[in-house]
Image (cartoon, rainbow, N blue to C red; front, side):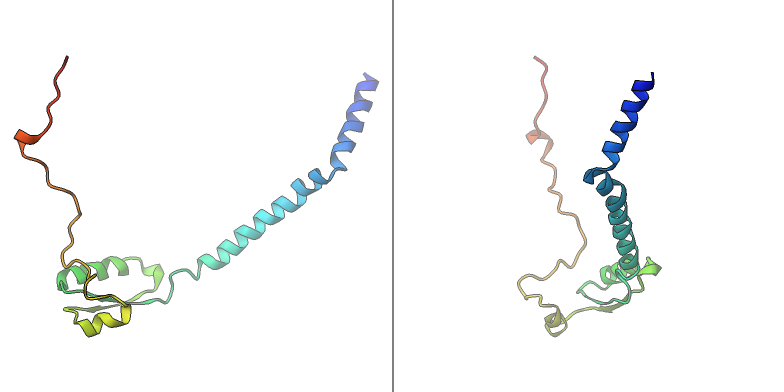
Length: 124
């Protein structure tokens, strides 16, 4: 029994003297704490104090987008609505006249085919 304890003590001391042990017990926790601290410092600055302008042809849609953006009060956004937007209003954002955004909010879901054109499942 005495030999087992002696061998275990020797193995333990060999393990804690190695570079890998020092690296994993000291440097890795310091690295993780540094990343968490850096993330916490920068998260308070994200999205604060931004000034945005919504240039749209549809006044109702622009108002709805503005309300949704202002719903998060912690972001501290200033949102202006320019509707109906002229080409001069769109010029600062770099939008070309060909690539104008849609004036209506509708998802791009294709319509369903007619019942006669739908595939049917038949059991064998």
